[in-house]
Length: 278
Image (cartoon, rainbow, N blue to C red):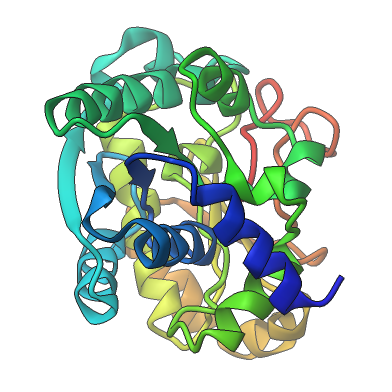
């Protein structure tokens, strides 16, 4: 099916809805969904961004600017995930607790504005990943129109490029808790140093950076094509990462792998299996 037909199917899927709240991270998936919802429902489509303790640096500012540029109806809420002891203990279903809280807040907001459906940007490829948040979405009655239309990540990017969305090629992002192996408690300090280290290394010109925090060791994942350049910049990378609070810095020669800490993909001796995505 041509991408224009898939996008038309997405619009058709949205058209019967009376009003929607779109969980808007600012990534390409939720952006395409928010734009499509706006095209079909106008002001009955509300994009809502969660300001989170666990967001990578700059994501809220980027989402805010993107919503303004695209003319989305936009609001923000605040989530405090680390206040939940279940989540902070970092169990394998950590994402379930996080998403349950998010969807509860979105439902409360939707009810106050008489908007009947909550949408998220999960795409068809996500069905193959380790994502406990999907269970929270099902239990909360959240719909995932991209999945319903069988739109893969590649489809989403093609549609976003066709629509000239400015973030059509934005690298995938994930909450910073996904940098810490399951079973290792998530603390404000741990998240702060991961956030700072990723921000510093990204400033060297790397578009996709993951700092996997194994205690005092920072294991850096970069796309395979960036590994050679990282070796050339090893002194700067080491200094910047140690300056964020790590004692030792390593470069993963296997390169960036989404979900590399997941139970089925983890291959090093961290404490317990690791978080989903990114």
